[in-house]
Image (cartoon, rainbow, N blue to C red; front, side, top):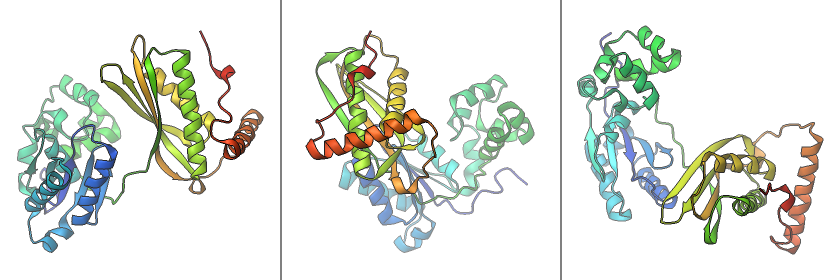
Length: 335
């Protein structure tokens, strides 16, 4: 079978890239605009989305590029957001195309018959799905462009990159990607924040504030009957820059102990030394109903005692206010 022979017959997949650091509310509005054009939209947080346009082209009376122009016109006119729209027969081709468009926005459409010739000259790290480490390994073997990767036997690529990763890389270099666009909305999230009255270095004060945010977030989730599958932390520094990181929780939770452990891992990952902090934002990511998550049976009596204490604390706060009881200062390690 010739390279690219399994590419879909119509370029109907759109990969829409929004500007970096787009506010979540605005990103949701972009997703809503896409949903007005096609019923098959897949959110790719924090600032991208996929849209399957095949069923929408006849309805709107345009080709894929024309629909991409409508997308861009609407986001600019209604939201003031210029987007980059890559169009191709597969997710890999569309996502690779959108990454080749220079900001702030534009449209790049790749027809099925052009896929192999278009992908070939691109640097190997430009192929969607190839990470920096994989690209470095491939370049070490002289594979510096997608065309060279496509010419290698799949078994050779598997030996270089590993079984599954090598198989995917070999297929995608040939334009082969059978994945469909799966409708998926943006996962819900919620956040709590604290601004410092003065510039503050990492230490006991920052850890105490972070612990307080953990308690606030946990209480908020439990009141809403939700649990978080991930936790995000944003550190704001004097002068304007910020640091942000998100990690998946081992299991979905709304309990203070689980949130605190991950929150401390996140702030430790920042490697703060003399950075002057002006604020913290703690986010519960990918929220789902607590009744949708299986509860693990625990034989840890210490953990069970803490959960009972947490329940009691929640009742006290419900009766006397959220500040009636706070995290114990004795839990902090003060240097």
